[in-house]
Amino acid sequence: MPDIIQLLPDNIANQIAAGEVIQRPASAVKELLENAVDASATEIKLIVTDAGKNLVQVVDNGKGMSETDARMAFERHATSKISNIEDLFKIKTMGFRGEALASIAAVAQVELKTRKTDEELGTCIEIENSIVKSQEPCATAAGTNICMKNLFFNVPARRNFLKSNAAELRHIVDEFIRVAMAFPHIFFSLTSNGQQVFHLEAGSLKHRILQILGTAYSAKLVNVREETDYMNIYGFVGKPDTAKKTRGDQYFFVNSRYIKSAYLNHAVMNAFDEMIAKDSFPMYVLFIDLDPSQVDINVHPTKQEIKFEDEKIVYAFVQAAVKHALAQFSIAPSLDFSLNADIQQMEAISKPANEDRLQSIASSNLFKTFTQKNQAHKIEGTNRSELKHWKDFYEPSSLELPSDLGSVTETGKLEQELEYSGYSLLKQGPQIRLLPDATLVQLHNTYIITPTSEGFLLIHQQQAHERILYERYIEAANGKQMPAQHSLFPSTIELNATDSVLMEELLPDLKVLGYLIEPFGNNTFVVQGTPADILQGNEKMVIELLLEQYKHFTSDIKFSKREKLVRCVAKQQAIKTGKAMAQKEMMVLKEELFRCQVPNVTPNGSPTYLEFKGDYLERMFGRQ
Image 1 (tube, rainbow, N blue to C red):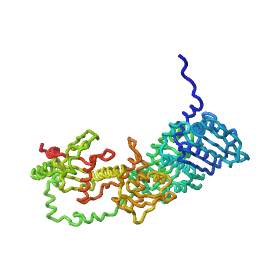
Image 2 (image 1 turned 180 degrees about the vertical axis):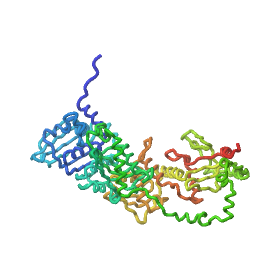
Image 3 (image 1 turned 30 degrees about the vertical axis):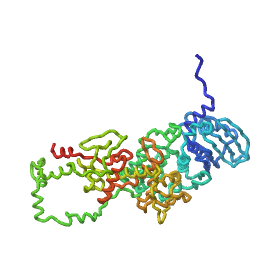
Image 4 (image 1 turned 90 degrees about the vertical axis):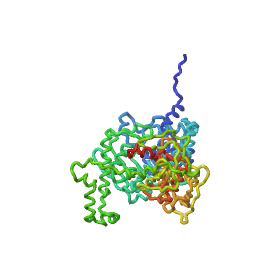
């Protein structure tokens, strides 16, 4: 048989290698920005067209390259950062493996213009599919100007996997922010399709944070700074009242390189223990500086995952530094010694015990079990007549549910009924006969008790309302647009650049759901109207929370953009636990729930109600 193993051509090998480094336009943006930083630039401009699919251009005023260096920069594994293996473990620059430009040239059309400050003429190189098309002297400004055009033009299958322009632009903005945040002493700008998205003047770290994350943090930042012989940590954390329900503004940098580390994030969360709610996440921008030999950054092509030689020391140091900073600024849980005014109205205060009441208490069985010997396990006989009304509660009734609220059966969904400790978690609803005229009871401002012909249902008001809203919004998303209520005084919302890009993407879908929002320029939007059944007055908070939920929507199932938005809106607008409801409100909620196609579970699968059956109630009281 003939030999079958052969060397791949250079252009194919380069395209395969490029797949690890350049996954989308944002990957190229990251590499080119880092190269500009390594070139000691003080001004870096990023220009993109069609979310980087047609053009990614980075212009810097760095030290530039000679004619030979410009040509060598596009060779695979050609780098000025490493000369021997020991250098790999003391890296202080952003790029070092010599793969970025070679990978970009393998999957795009590249034009490079560069000139050193001490030379009169620069060099212009055009490369396509890893092949140099031309190289000639040119007149250009000192520094480097590199254009990456038509990404994946020679790999159409890869290009088809790119997301929408809005989605890809969000990834570009994320990478831009991570580099710009790490180097506040450098001027950065980002222009997309001719519109300037960022204009970040050089300044302090705090100034850069406020430029990127918004001036709302101006009085909400706590300075963190600790220095030791082993490592230094500095940066800012947000005060506890800036914590959000979703992971938002959280940045970790090691030797000025952005990293993702659940381990270090846990250290910060521990430092905020008991200062914020368990389901909230603090804001932080933290920098760790330590000897490069103590950290391995070459464990992943994106260089965002690293390994520490002694991660336990780093964990303890981060946690202690954040705790110390919060303590210095007197930010800690406080005890409230003021007496609640409601306590003054309690019967124990307003009606002190008299002689007759004290004698009545002393003669009670409960008092005796605590004061007399050998009474701790005494169980008093129960008067069965006291339980006779329970039977009426779950005996079959002649009243039946009207036809429009009749039997509830879920079809084509989960075909399983889980019974545990006497109640049913209804995955496939059996015939439930509600008593339409029965009085409903709200328990702990969270649950609604409604009788049935065989027992009673315990409805969770928030999760039931979430199911109702979800089906209502799904119907709207499929063509029946929600009615909108125009605001008499439209409110203005100013977002950061990342959220502004996301808002632009969601505007058409939000309009379908009843939100009338228009762009007003400079990352500002005007809310002209909201869904008709939503109370007006807190539009800014509602929309900001909606964006946070959408950005960090997670699930094992891959949902469409509209499905994610519908789920977020339904969850956000649902009646919250702790809200007292009138009898009429509870009746409407119950009726609308059982008009739903799938009334027994929320969109994410949690139960909206539990059924307690009569036979279980019998067993509870020893009647079976």
